[in-house]
Image 1 (spheres, rainbow, N blue to C red):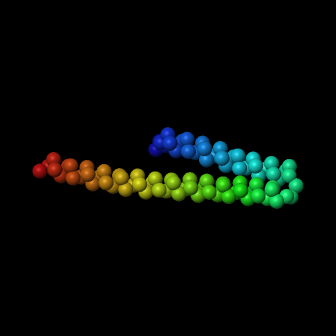
Image 2 (cartoon, rainbow, N blue to C red):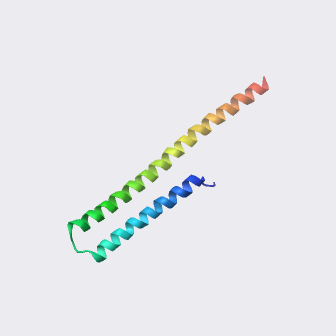
Length: 87
């Protein structure tokens, strides 16, 4: 099954942001001393990564449910049209 173009671009943005977060964490771990600013940067990066992953999964599940509901509606409309044609 081929993906829609919108998910292709969404994945690019999501993976780019996650890579950026990973770069922040690695930079802070190897460059900064243990300061409150470094802790805040790491906590913010992990918080943003968690929010991105949660919304990615939630958005995909929501879209799948809507596609399933729409396919049920379309199949029932097709069945009604076939019944009408037979009458």
